[in-house]
Image (cartoon, rainbow, N blue to C red; front, side):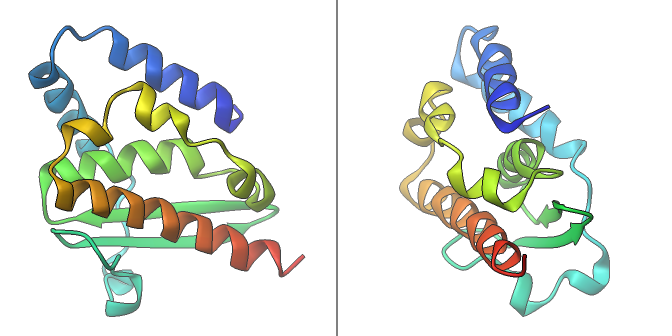
Length: 139
């Protein structure tokens, strides 16, 4: 699936919930299925700056795609990074760099997060794009 299709699928999933308590529960569930980062990658270098909780993100190039793994010490944050990894893992660097991020607003995520969590979300996206930029220049 391409990024846009995955984003549309996520928007559809979130539209099934009537209120934000149900959406928070869903985000937490998504976090439980997150492809976890290996312990050896839980380093200071992979820690995302600007997050209220600890979030580690690791990306590696496999063939012509980037595969991301992550973890967090907070259940909600783990769910948020899980949404981003579902969207951007196994995608080409150029596609990640060109991706429209409006699906975050469509599901209402940013407006329902505390300011520090919203900043963390922005930092997570920035780190994913930085990986894509780094791998894209290797071509």
